[in-house]
Length: 145
Image (cartoon, rainbow, N blue to C red; front, side):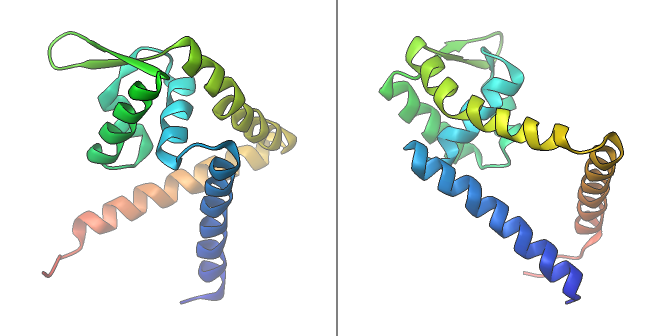
């Protein structure tokens, strides 16, 4: 493996570890954090399926975390149209979100906006390009089980 790619993988691992450490310090699980983060992004009352699709986590993990958060009083679930399930933050959930996900989003935004527009565009475009090419190549890959 090339040195630059090893460094890239190490950076990704360290970023994931940093987010996990934040969750530990904030006293919430990684999946709870992801749900709060996505609700900040997509808005209160979004479809549970949108949370699953935007988190990169498995359906079972998201379902379990949502049930756990509902029991704790952070979210409430409502039936939407058809098979849609809508997820809303309760007042306790909004307070938790303000203390956790919203603070991290502020940090991320401060870092991102400290970069020049060119750096921002390069960062986004290269990450998007990497993801698209990765997904394309994995689809073409012959899977041997």
